[in-house]
Length: 215
Image 1 (cartoon, rainbow, N blue to C red):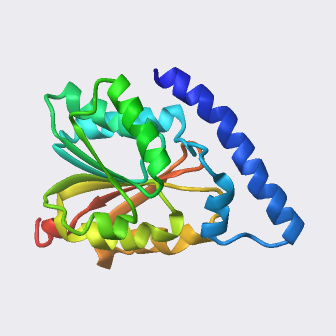
Image 2 (cartoon, helix red, strand yellow):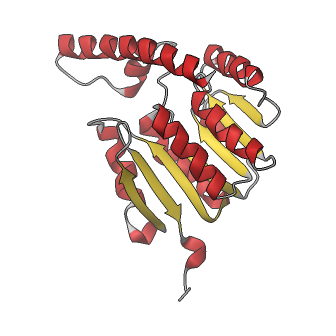
């Protein structure tokens, strides 16, 4: 099933990115995120296969019980994360999606994968739909609009478990991500962080505030 979804995403994502590149070349400027995502349309904007495998391995090795994901799209990354929970005995995955059409596609894909009982899809602006989360959150995945990463992190941060993992899907030459990366790489913000060279990059961070004073 994942092979099929990845093949579909490879085609649709390439077409969507070409639309954005053509429009930006026409205007001679980089479009702001709302306009870029409007041109992306219903394309999955999916993670690469090796990124999905990384998500699965990290969630499994971390023995995550609660995962929060910002940006489900068609549910490809969600399937990897939910499979990790299922394979280690269960858990809870809360994911968000702004567009109802994409959320419905994700729901169908999760049902076809037999993982719908583990996942709750919250439709709408994540800065509203995630306000009533209950912690602790073991893994936070950021894969929605890049300019909202810091805001979503700030919303979920008080609920992060000791040594929680934060995974942020990056984009090439994306200025919206610089503020996020700068934040998680400053020791005073209680993260240890590095970029992994998979696809366009994955920022892997460990939340360390609960370890203050430890030898």
